[in-house]
Length: 201
Figure 1 (cartoon, helix red, strand yellow):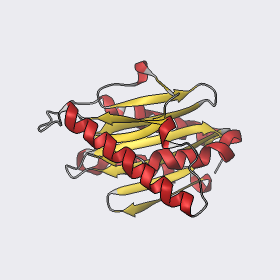
Figure 2 (cartoon, helix red, strand yellow):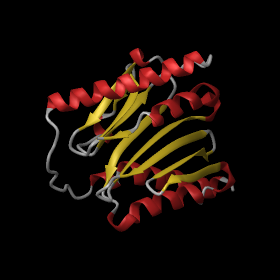
Figure 3 (spheres, rainbow, N blue to C red):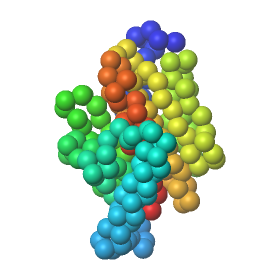
Figure 4 (cartoon, helix red, strand yellow):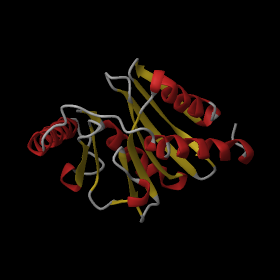
């Protein structure tokens, strides 16, 4: 299912789900980690990624981007973190307290990571339906009851890779990497590396 009339609304729906739903009601959050605790968590996440890279290197597989060239974005308010390349910039207009959007002007790639209220799993169901309705060009599945991953072509010339994590309180964190199809050979592994780094805190 790849004609323009079908793919255009799919792309619009994904953008709406990622960038607009995070602007909803701000709920009070208790036990927000201190800056020192947050720094310790970021260090631990970086160490874990370095350890994984070392194990991969032992098997002859090198990471796409060395961890030294990645930076950790941590959101203490919403309790998650994700690693992105250091040279990617934040799109301030598209970002808020619930999450951030990172842009790489050289490759026209973006990373969106944010918290969504997900009342009664409505947002999770909607996000999964949009991806499943994209047809055979997008493949996705539940890794477990609290994680969903998908990737594929969402419109002509554009590809996405997404990971959704449901938090213990029922809210969810959605991360997506979008990039041109003609850069897929280079950016597919990077997208996987970024999404693998998404962690709840």
